Image 1 (cartoon, rainbow, N blue to C red):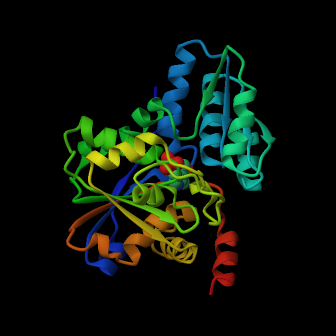
Image 2 (cartoon, rainbow, N blue to C red):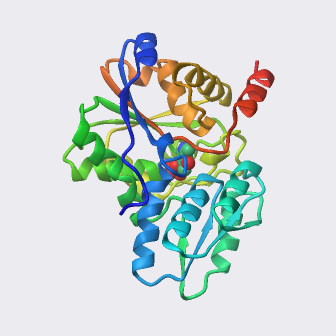
Length: 306
Ligand SMILES: *Cc1c(COP(=O)(O)O)cnc(C)c1O
């Protein structure tokens, strides 16, 4: 039994009417842990458990930690999660509610990550939020489901933090012989580690994360994301936080669902009809979800970003 569910794939009337594309939504927000992380992290946790892991350790800005906590509870494996100071109180509470021990340490994901690694004992499994081939293989099930239920999209729009989702989607496209489907990788300004790596042709370490989309706040993407960019057609789009938040608000009105700005930025690329999308008919957005944001928080951000 996998630790994720098969999510709905729906054609969005509001988004299609507004943009002129045929817009399809893969609703990862419906996962039990509130984001697509349930797939890759769930798969990795099951695999490490099968190999004999007695405890799961993770560092995470929120949704990855929550997915580990969820997996640990379901597999009856104790979980320790180290989060940076930037992680939301809400995400920390949700992880604790899943029975995980939550430790706050470090100013950034990479500092929390270093501390989490220092805790790892020989019988523990360390779950990286995005840089692990098992996680990519687990995320790839998103594409298996789309292949099963169709239709084949002309382009896939997704958010990039550390690039785990991107690598999983490309692995899924490859294993289903859909390599010809291009990807638009969207980030917020101030968390654009993938765009900067593409520009530099090498991994770039961001000195700090200045976006409210802390879920996208990996200071560098995984190497595999950059390698895939040399083989797979990937367009890069970077948008300001303000557009990510207004897309979250519009999505709430259109589909009655609350998503994080980390997800809103992918929606914003479509709502704003970025030039990278012109010419495509069937546009599929991975509605990656996220539990760290509330309606109140979205309204607060909207008010200050006017
Ligand atoms: C983790 C996450 C991302 C970014 O995924 P990466 O694999 O780090 O690129 C985007 N949105 C949400 C909601 C997430 O939980």
